[in-house]
Structure formats: C-alpha cells, structure tokens
Image (cartoon, rainbow, N blue to C red; front, side):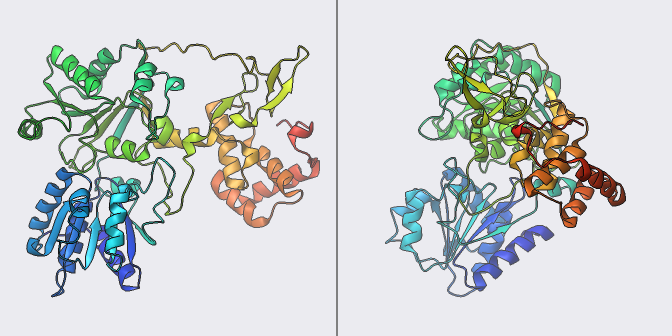
Length: 510
C-alpha cells in the first residue's frame, strides 16, 4: 500500500471534503510528476471502504488504463469493484456496466469532448473527480461546464524546493521562423507550417550537436511534430553512433513494448516520438527532453517539458528547447493562475517594438495615419515616430542563424520578458506598472532611467490625483524602497507633475 506524502494526503482530504459538502464534481489540479496516480489510487481505495462502493475510472488512452491498473493493485484497491476503461469503451457499454458511486477521470482537460459528456450525463447523479496538470484548452474554453469546484495542489516551484520534483536546466534558442507558424483547425500549429518554419535550417545536425554538448551519454526523449520528422531525427542520432528508436501509436504493440523496455533498461539512449510519451509515460531516470515541436498548447508544453523532472536524489533535468517554446509559455516553474472559467490564450496577443524608442506594446495599439503621399502608415503611440515599414509592405524573410549557441533560460528572465512585452499605461496595478517599467529597463526594450518615478507619474495620470497610501506601501514592497524614501520621491513627483498623459503631448523624462 502507498504511503502518501503530506501534500498528497492534503489533496485527498480536500477532494473528499468538497464532495461531502455537496459538490457533485470536483477538479483536482496538480503538476506533472506530483504523483497523481498515487492520489487517484488512494481515493479509489477509500471509496471502496463503503460496502456499496463502486469506482469507475476513465481516461482517453489505453496506456494510461494499464498504468492506473498497476497503481490500484499496488495500493490494494479491490479491482473486482472497479471499472477501468478508456472513455470510448465506457461510452459504448453504459447500459452493461455496474453503476458507479464515484467516477474518476484522469487527464480531464480532454473531458469537454462529447464522449465524456455522454458518460457524465448518463450518470448525472454520480459524484465525479477529475485530475489534470493543466485545466486548459486551445480554444480558451474553461472546465466550468464539467466541474463546479476546484482544488489546487502545490506549485512546481514548491515541489522542486522540497525535493519532490527534480530541478532543471533550460537551454533554448529559436531555430525556426515563428512568423511562418499557422494554426490548423485543431487550434495547434499545422505540420505543414511547422515544416515551413524550419526552412533550410540544419536542425537535424543541431539536435545531435546540442545533445552531445549538454547531455552526452544520458537518455533523452525527443518530441517531434510528425512521424516522418521523428524518424529522421532518430536516423540522425543513429548515424552519429547514438542508439535511437522512433515509436508512435501505429507501432505494433509488441514492438512498442520492446522499445519501451529497452529504453527503460538503458539499452536505447534516445527515443523519438509524436505525443505518445507525454501523458502518463513514467521514466523516472530519464532526465533529458528535447523539444523539436513548436506548439500553441500549454497542455502539450507542460507534459513534454516536465517529462524529465521526476525526482531522484542528485538529479537535474535538462530541457533542450530547439524551437523557443518558452517564449510562448515560460519555463516549468513559471507562475500560473488556474481557473474553471473561460480565458483568452495570452499568446494570442501580438507584440510590436518601435524601431526608434524601443517601446514594446500590443500591435493593435499602433496609431494609423496617412502620410503626405496618401499611404497608410503606423505611428508609435509612445514617441510618435512613423514605423519604418509601410503597413502594406510584406515582412522580410527571416534569416535563421543555425550557428548560434543555446543559452540558459530561467524563471526570472521569462517573468521579465512577460512584463516587458506589456504597456504600462494599460495596467491599473501600481506594482505591475513598476514591474513592466523595470523589466523594460533591465532588458533594454525602452530607454527608462528611473522606473520608480515613471511609475508614480503614470499612476497619478490614471487616478487624476493623489496615490492612496496602501498603493504606495505595495510599491515600497515590490521595489524594495523604504517608505520614508518613497514618500519623499512621491511628494517631489507630485509637486512637478502635470496631469496629462504622454500621448497628449507632454513628455516627462527622468
């Protein structure tokens, strides 16, 4: 029987309390690698302590069915009172299966699909629990239609700090042209656009070179966008004397099990795949992942980038991002706020940078004007200068520097980039205004000498008057400026401030 960690026991208790309080459907969010199978197995065991208890477990992939069956056995769950099947099999046997007293769904970010809803509607009076590392869909649709309450586990940062996940090194450079990436009907990038974005880049040679530089001799999982591409990558490794195999959902079961077994035993160094080794594939001693698939899906990014972070004493995971996915989603321990509500994918926001003042802002904020020749042009909303390119001009072909070295990426840098790519005038939070200006100063995207003073002036413009004391206290905390010093700076700024925005013609320089 499993011995749960304290945070896992807390999740079990919180989920059961939600159901006891009258909630019929509860979503449990816990990071990849945090041991959701253990939590699921314990909840199932406790549910069957009741004489009439009957558990139904469903998931979208047969490999996960096999995995949870093993977890149930290890936790001494009575399998004779469990239905463990893929969602498709359950949906076609609803009138033949024993009625459950509890339904458990793993990887439940898939559960907005009609097949899941068919099951939930059929057992509308049965309480449900769902598990996921990322309650997110490409459409931006939240899981509020399926779950009425949510329980969150610890953050990735906490799990790393407390030795439940391995720390990581993130190496990345973008060896593709992101402008050529186009979404398909599924919402993710189409395979054709991914191939177009790679162009003539020597990405096959680069993957071997970077593997040897950052993870030589270690086992690695390579994520590709297509079967053909995955096979080509495996061939490239083999040509360089590094034993590699490709595996996909069409690989015969016996052959796939042989490959997986050889990989787990260490006989095979590199395994290349398309999506197969993500959800539910557990290789504790594999610490290296190589991302060669650009994606719009946060679910895919989390599942793949964190696949090598299963904890082992002394282990440090290496993530080699060949396609710059961190620019879209950040790094594994990037702070995220989960919700059951619908939300717009932040990656949809298009960013522009002025060629003159280096202001960074949403592309939609360009001021459209007509020049003396009658041509449509764009004017920077900050410095007022016209963009160098005519609106109708096509962007120049991007030259990909395949000789460039991968660089270290960390959480602080990602957070800085996130704030630097925002307009301080659009934020209504004094702390966020300061973070935006400080990040733009640190990264050099705008010429800002004194972000603290600029923050005060922007906030006074927004309020058309004085800044409340509670906001100044928050600014003091985030900037590390003592309150007595901040008060002096604020009063000096207030005395000379003109209550007009820069865009109205007043430019305040510090």
